Image 1 (cartoon, rainbow, N blue to C red):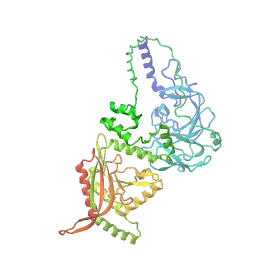
Image 2: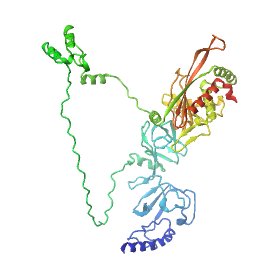
Image 3: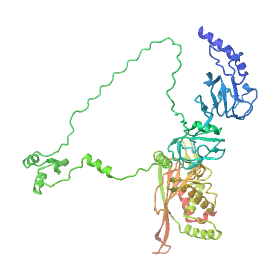
Length: 558
């Protein structure tokens, strides 16, 4: 009966809920508590507030139920101070005396409890309203970053769009811009700070220049925080006796073997007697008998040639001294090195690689390159490299065999309609793979220009995320710059293929006449395929198309 009466009483209160929502938008009431007062008496529960900074919009809340006007535009409030305010926790209201809030309020026609505070609190410690700037997530795979350098110093005024600092991400160095006007009050992590987690506070900004000095010794609160507060004591309920299930008996641990471990020397009885008669230690003799046992002949040979001084095994202390005597330098891993290592390890462990190699004659390609470069020099353009022609041929082959221009997911194979070729570039900071977009639609001059600009950015460590994200296939060339004849590359996930290009070399091949031979230049290329996406026949078909474009480069113009 008691439980039923509670349900009836609360159902009556729920019928009055629309009346609650029509009250002033700042009223927050503990609705389902026995100690609440009537909602009609708003006197003491009214939220008295005054605005400190600018408010975009007429009302703090845009709820139709709260203010009577519907607005789909998010409203932004800089900061406001409340007296006898209430803090929403799980839909209930908890009293908080004298708290000052600064934050970003998004109201989308929901209830007042949907407010999200994006900025910091001006706590009772006396700190003025401020904003904590966290380490941003500047790429999809970024979990931590480094501060390369600060372009602003403490006390400087910052305006929207100005660059605050340069952040070294897992792939490049990116500029971090300021989003609001204010003053840089405190730099938490200075130049060269390493391994800062995404979201961790790196700086503090304030709106009033006079508040800068108040943050001189400011330290952000740890994300872990202190010990959690003990929950409030509740009315003790009736304790029910719970019988503990009998725990299973602990298994008796097996007693370790007590047999001593000794370096036993195996020798025949006759060999042992002969060694004892001549005071010869068996441990200094190498046996030639079965399983390395010492026989009589080993003792006689030892006695015939005399007791030679055999080199003693180095002791543990000597081994440690040898290791410590080796000079070495520990080189810290950069963010790009860590990400490259993790992605390549993931690729080799999760992608079933297989490799297809073909030799292509590049005589016609080399001749065409010479003719095009003569035209480029005459017009003031940049020279076209063999790698530019390889990128163009690979892009056209992908358009001809689109199955290779795909990636694997657990539910489907995604086949891309655009061809974006990543080009591997080695720098002092690590390996970068900037992307040449729409390589199948661009001319050789445009591809050459893109590759040179992207390689320059990579060496300067100034690539933007748009410069290396979104590739569908990768080309890695170690032949031209390094003279590597042939190699197998690791697939760059989530792509399904990568082409490894070796160097060109002259070979003697049969000519058209009987007994005649000629010289020709051949280049080895190896296609690494994800067998989940590209079957062997499909990979072979792609290489056939690629070889056709390389050996007959004029077909790339069709």
